[in-house]
Image (cartoon, rainbow, N blue to C red; front, side, top):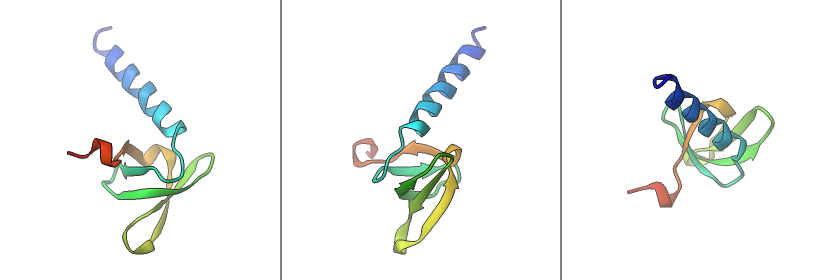
Length: 72
């Protein structure tokens, strides 16, 4: 029970994060790609990276927020 609870909480938090993604958010993908959200669809997100390149990725591939407030 004590081993499962933190995983369930982390999973719920990640799901909330993915559902709250919006245009303009700075994010990092699971693969380490940094970019800015350009478009959000039901299951995918378009991320704009350096040089104006746009990548279409699954929402589940977005790992975390990387806005200025989260940088050290």
